[in-house]
Length: 302
Image 1 (spheres, rainbow, N blue to C red):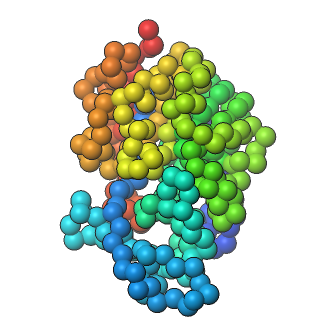
Image 2: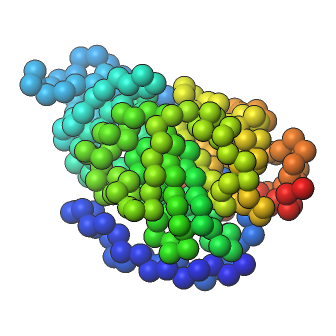
């Protein structure tokens, strides 16, 4: 299937503006794709050395935000903090946004980095455009999660898309992203966009044979996003797709993702509805050791 050609002008937010990007002609045949955001557990000290007027957070010590994971011995993730912009305990998770010295504003959920202004485009573009260019004519698109708005921003760049709906469980992520991550949250203001605050499971239960593309832009399979990596969720995705529909989902580091979750397609089936084939691609990012994708090729829906 030939990918549609688009030339995109990225939002300019100094000093991280990028030249116009285009998606070149290629061939895909995927109906399910995985991308990865790495999972980290937080190490912190409570004696942050910041003035009393500034917002503090336990993951920040001596001006550095840090993540350390038992899964990656000898490796840690740190970013130098210029200023903490907002910290809020929502109903579902800990939400932190800080301004870094080198990566712009950074969104952190439950002590895990979700995106930075400097390199978020590499994640948003892949998870959105791989799916949309794998479908011959995607008109209705659904995003589960994605409260920062970056995936929505990429979806509405496709002229063929008539409606893009985003469902996120946490209104705090959407609200704070609009305030502190405007280059991503601009997707919410597009006339094609609709936003629903609520549980993705309950939302999907109301739709059958409705969407051409569904994208799950969740956090990692801990906390409120854990249910989005189970078999029952993938069944709901399948039922909400139209004939020939495509789904993509964030998949952590792919080998660890397969070990940590249950019911995700591995050896040929999501229950009974679809047979699958696994392909894989990957590349490196400055912030993460590895960022990869896997496409699962599905047979036509019965």
